[in-house]
Every structure is written in C-alpha cells, then in structure tokens.
Image 1 (cartoon, helix red, strand yellow):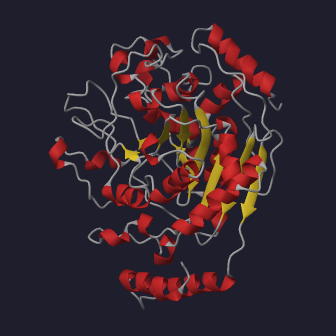
Image 2: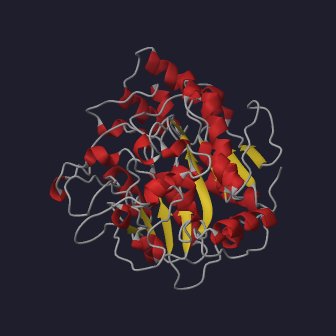
Image 3: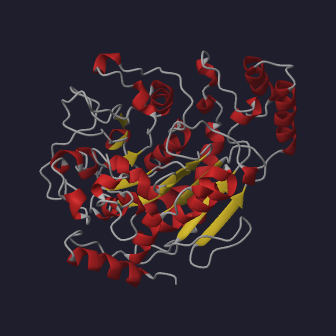
Amino acid sequence: MKLSRRGFLKGAAAVAVAGLLPGRKAFAASSWEHRVVRVHNPLASFFDVLDFEYLKDVPESYYGNFVNQKIVYDMFDTALCRLTGEDDPVVAMKRLVPYKPGERVFIKVNNTATYRLWRGQWETIGWDEHYNDTDAIAEPINAAIRALTRIGVPQEMIGIGDASWSEGYPDSQKRTPRITPNRVSKKIKAAFPNVVLYRSSYMPGGNGITYESNDPHAIVKFRDPLIDGREQRVTSHRIPDQLIEADHFINLPIMKRHDQGGVTGAFKNNFGTIASCAYFHEPRYAGEGKAGAMYSTTANPAVDIWLNPHVGEKTRLIVCEGIFGGWNWGNDPPTGWKQFGGRSPNCILLGTDPVALDSVVFDHVTESLPDKVKDYPPPNMLVDAARLGLGPYESRKSPTAGYKTIDYLEINEKVDEAKLHKLADLKKKFKSGGKTADEIRDLLAESGAIS
C-alpha cells in the first residue's frame, strides 16, 4: 500500500513517542514524495572500453579517470528537473533545498574502501595510493556542489566528507579513518576551490571531521538495547559536528548490494554519518545465537540513524552514484552489469524517499550483477523503515516491470551513435591486443568519443 504523507508523519510521530525522534517538521506533501529518477547515458564513463583493466603500477588506469564530467552535469540537471517537474534545474534545486543566507550544507560521500590508505600515523597516509576498489568518484559530487552554488550557496558553506572513524577514542591508533584520496579531492578542488573538504573522518589540527558538540541529539539512540547500552556509545555513536551544524544534508551513496545489510544505498551510507558502526553487522550486539543487527526487521540500526533529527530531518536530496556502482561494500572493482549489456551502468539516481530509492537500487544490483549477490540477504532495513512510515518498500518482478507504490522514472538519454561505435571499435582493438591501455586513452581523447 502506498504511504501517504499523513502515513509518514504518523509513523514518525509513533517513533517520537517512543523517545527516538523529538518531533519532525510537518512539511507539505511534494509531488515527488515517492519518486525515484534514474538517468542513463552510455557515454558517461568509458573505463569498460579498456575491458575494466586495472594496472597496478599505472595510476592513470584508475577507473575514475574515465568519466565525462560534462555529461554527468547534464545527467544531474535532467534528473533534478524530472524529479521536481520543473523545466529549469536551478529552480528545481531551489525547491529541493530551501536555502537561506548563512546556512550550511553537508554532503556525505562514500569512501568505504579507503581504510587501506591509513598506515597508523597521520604523516604517513597514502593520499596518492593507487587502488581499484569501488569508492566515491568526483563527478557526481561536483554535480551536487554545482547545483548548490547555482542556488546561491557559497562554496565555503558546503562541507564534504565521510565521518566513519571506526571504534574507540580519537587518540587511539587502533582506529581507522575514512579518507578522501587525492585522486578525488584534486578534482573537487579544481572545480570548486573554496568548498570545505574534510579529508579524513578524523585528523588532529584541521581539515578532519570532529565530534565535540554538546547537542542533545549528538549521540544516536538505537532501539536495540544491546547496541544502545554499549560502553562505547558516547564516542562511537556520535554524529559529527559538521552535520550537527549544517542546515541541509545531501546523502551521496553508491549503488551496491551488501552481503549482510542487503543493500548499500541511502540508509547504509549513513553508517558513515556516525563515528563508528563497528559490530552492527555481527551477532554480538543482536543477542546470543541471532544474526547481526543488520538482519533485523524491527530494530535495524541503519533506520535508527536516519531517525536522528540531524540526519533524516535535514536530508534534502539523495544522489546515488551509479556510474560504476558495485556489488558489495568494498574490495570490489568496477565490473560489467548484465542489465547494461556488460558495460558500466552509467547512471545516476535521485530521490528524497530513502526507502523507495534503496528499493530501486536493490533491484538494479540484484538483476545485473554476479549470481552470488542473489544469496545475499534481503534488505531488512527497508522492511523496518517502511513499517515506520519512512517510505514504500517494493521489489519489481523484472527489469521491464514497473512499481505499484514507487513513482519510478527511467530516462535513457539519446547519444550520438557514431560515438558509441567509436568506443566499440576501440574496445575491439584493445581486446585484440592491438593497442595498450595508454594508447586507447590517447585515442579516446583524439576521437571525440568522450568530448
């Protein structure tokens, strides 16, 4: 059954009574309440032209180097307009983010695999480390920043980071930060030099996420008493100061499945909005003999984080990166997707309803990636979230089937067929051994296929 705005508020009110949520603002229902927009452009990236080849000793082979920023900007604008029904992407963004002078915006990115850059000391971080695991790329982040600046948000009022800082106290060397590597940060700073980029989820002396606020909701309250009663809750369950001080929040996950949580999207990305989500997936905090808390359909920790007023109430837009996507939380390089003819998905998805968007993400990944993902658990967090009235949870029967409760719009942008043929020809040359990866890069630039 489709949830009305009244149903949403009723569910939120029930949670508030339970002491989890101290009230939510009763915004008027929007025309895009349960809408999810997917925009696909096959020219958005071209790493697959190199047959997804990763060269360990060639930093230039990083998959994020094979993305067309202009096309991603255009895809983002199209998605904004189709989400809101506006013809002008600037007007559309204004409707989504009711920005007032002096307010701050925080963007949560997904740097989940960057733990490998941490070498135990701040002065030895591998900022230029070359690796191929699925992580945030710069282009969708830049698209969100661009949309914000066009509605009058000063760059210096926009903060970007991944807040997860593992377990323990900030001065403990046992902790592992999330880091924004140079390969991403340099692209962001080149386009928007004055945005505040929090390079690490914690860093003494500057440009890192901090956890010092005395705000009454700085510590997330969890419904599971075993999780909420943890000794580490006062340090590990904290919301970062940067989100507490922000007036608007943009959630920027990556389209992925998860071998314990079911799906990595808007809800799971918020594990990175607290200092540590350590052991939420494991049985130790779900009761003896039970599966991890992430399997729960009644007290899922991912939902509890959303219910914190600094998270769900401030979320204005969810931007899901599906340019490359992935099939699990980390240690997995970009690969071909069945639904997209063996190519990268080359999509971005926009929405404001986390349950609806994550439902669509779940279906995309399950339909397109290796058979092993079908053995992963269902997205129980979405069952829990829908039960609380946060949005409709639904799974479609096939890639060509529609949704009954989700207003899903699929936009497949028309492209120059000649450019697609050029990409195909270059891939044939590479696979036949006729050209090296570096030569293909040069040919891509010369061919105009990516201009």
